[in-house]
Length: 395
Image 1: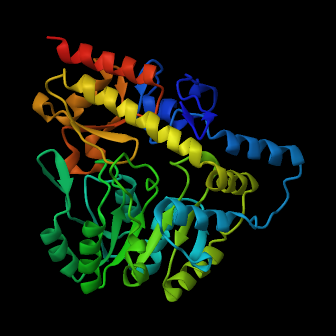
Image 2: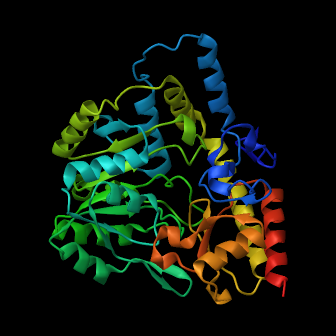
Image 3: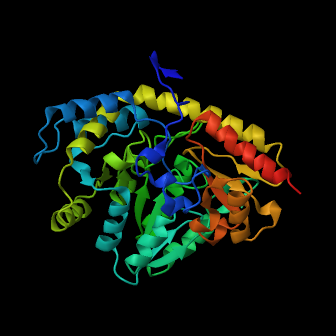
């Protein structure tokens, strides 16, 4: 696989057990899970872009790792990336650093809601949303997505009613949506934004998967819809997924409203989470400046993996692919098997040899589903599908 004349290989089978990778760690797979098809944790099995690896080697070669300021080129690189890739023109002064996306989500809840206030989520959705709200003693207000003809959509009537609840102060928007793979359109996002504005509900947008969309689908940053939408938004971004650097990068919040931004700045200072990691800074700047060809090649490879998955599942009655529009995570519907969640997990692990993410982790609406990560070498995906096919065909 190549991009812009550069060769990139995504077929190499890299032993991730040589480092304490969460995807293959016993705490995820269990003590007996060494031979499972590990396709649960949401990262890629590909090496980071060569430009990132080269930048990290150069920084390592310097040999001095004392306290550092933010590199002059990092924020401009992010601004230029968002403009070039997504036609989103962001003021550099609106960008704040964050240790990670989850930290930003938790800080937003802590700053702009009180204990007992409600935060709207749209399940099935990223499970850490639930944990953050529980641990911060906020009330989860669920507005489930609607699955219709194999495609999920937002329940806008339900959202209007939930936003009108006097407890509702915030919504966690997953854009693109993990795990169902929807890339929300500008029209859908405007409708959500208008409802939230009418009821003074702050939009906190987790847009970590924004760079990963498939052909004919385009990520629309919520805050790029216009000044009014940006003023009611905390946008949370990171190159972690796009460039597979989750363990050596940080994140950003983009906050157009000066009052909310000053509150975030003060909280960053109070919690002392505004320090710099030299390797994170180097990795992110290199990715945003020079990683585009690699990302384009990854997207092309993911498309072919998706084609392989789609083709294989056509010959497996009892499992349906919810067609993804973005992310490298696929949402599989096993409800036709009639299994209870624990039984489905046991079937996938014990019969198919799969270690994927249980559907109910994303809310009760995920019962009968499982999330499969396809960001792996083709041979590994095909072997995993061989295991599923054998299990599905067994009496």
